[in-house]
Image (cartoon, rainbow, N blue to C red; front, side, top):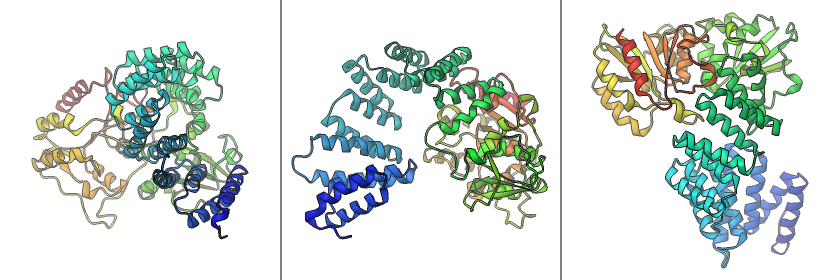
Length: 545
């Protein structure tokens, strides 16, 4: 359809009508035709941005929408007299939001700075503060929040976000005080009750935390955040019956995460007979989660389905395909980039503890259930360099986890924090870094330690989890923070020491040095929040003994 200059206004109006009626493809087609005729048409460019955001909340949609917003802003800037209008202000706010969700944090902050210049409102002060927080620029964020609170002292949202910021700065008592101030202003603010509960849980005030989550759920029975946080607290305390049941609320928290092929109609309930049926089990979260909970597929296999397919992340498929325990149980491994076969019922791997009525005392530990053949037996070239000596113990080290994990700042360490121990022990231990990549800031130190024969850097050899498993097989011990490699070593039956923060992930439970998930593992826990030095000292004593 050709759009003449005289009918552009009508095309925009028609596109808006199509969008309001849910006919997004037709609206998009009209707007694209407008842009073909008038490439700098602000309403058409911004309209395509908003339509793209309606397509979904995945990063690809946000990235495409951000590009349309950028074009709209550039076109708008070329129009005289537009710089301070409400139209410009609204576009800046939405563009900044979109860039933030696309991962373009610096660009988002730049747009928010312009927004605040045009409209220095408490709302925009908060928006820019959140932009600084996303970039870990906490001083700037706190200054903006304090300005906003001075301008609007009775806005509970400002005190709530001040609490979140104070928690990031390690000022935990002040964090809780800010939440309580917010609740005095808005006693029914569900997000504040939830975050208060999390803050109390992180201080091991578990009963108080549970009361906060309970109040949030009373105020809003549909609050997935209240339910999942209560579930994780129950699980951390070993209260599996309530914990696993409420953990099913995770599907309703945040953007949709359940695959399109899985819905309530074909959900296995854990009770229905599987004879003659095909069941599809699927991974849903991180690599470590998949490796930990895949053991439960072996229990499902005991139900004698006609066919059992386990869908895992593509990065793990080779590892699972090479692990005979699953093939021996008749479990087919499917990469998540392959087409989904026909099936009768499905279940997420992390729903199996609920469906199988798992309890702490009944956690199955069929160790090892992950294994790979040696490089020579697998017909692969040996990429791992041989140990430099034969008399030293061989220990693998993982000092940080996935930097994108929501709790990474709490659970990860730095290589510099381990350096003294590595140098003090390397004459009796051959240390190997089990990282396929490290942050740029740590590469010079890793290179120095490698050249000094203190810590082997085998990154070129670790191109897959199967490669990492082959390296682990040659070691005497793995020491790791809470990471996928810790689960890999545990599932392989390798002795593994797991280094945990004061408030660990729920799976590691509390107040114990062992774990029923991996009987050969030993846990080293912080006894005070954020203090790693005593943990390193305990590890060094354990190594010496």
